Amino acid sequence: MANDVTKDPSPKSDIVEDIYLWRRKKLAFSILSVSTSTWILLNFYGFTTITIISWIGIALVSMVFLWGSLLRLLSKVEPELSGLEVSEDFVVETMRSCRMLMEEMVRWMFRVGAESEWFVFARTVLGFWVLSRIGNLLDFHTCLFIGLVMGLTVPKLWEKYGDQIQKQLGSLKDKSKGAHNTTHEKILLMKNKLQHGTEEKVRKSE
Image 1 (cartoon, rainbow, N blue to C red):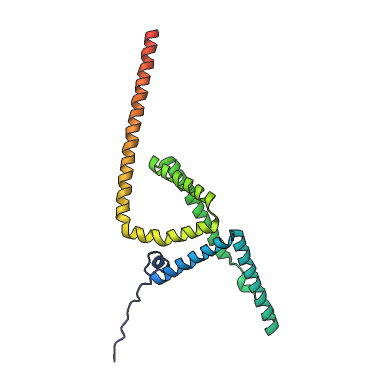
Image 2: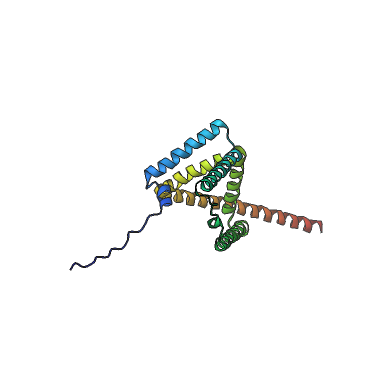
């Protein structure tokens, strides 16, 4: 009698991570190709984000209407809508997640504004300024397309060149700290000279 051999199930890979890191090249390339084609068509025909959302809403409402009409026509019964209710647990979990996200954002803002070094503060302000300029130049679906392209390229580049990028960022941070310390020392030196000069003038006037 043969003994049953139990094998541990192989760990399932995360499909999102596989797409971002191009482990599933065909799927990642298909997503990038479809997104690029869609973006080109939207810009070629001049569709705006509100137009796209409106058309999607029209399509969804039309499909639901046809589904309900065919169901009543063929089976003579009303569509069952009890399964479309949103559960209370889902609402509570969603609100809890939103609250945690808002608290984390508030803590992050105070850390950057009050506790972080000037390099982190300057980098954050620069990032927000760049985003504001991009928002003025681009529409919403173009921003989504750029975000998708960056999501499909940046993680792979970081996986391949992450060590070199961290070294360059560390070197840049050290140089900026050195320049900041030098400037701060010069400012303190000038301040001390001005204070000594004013004290000597006061003594001479006395």
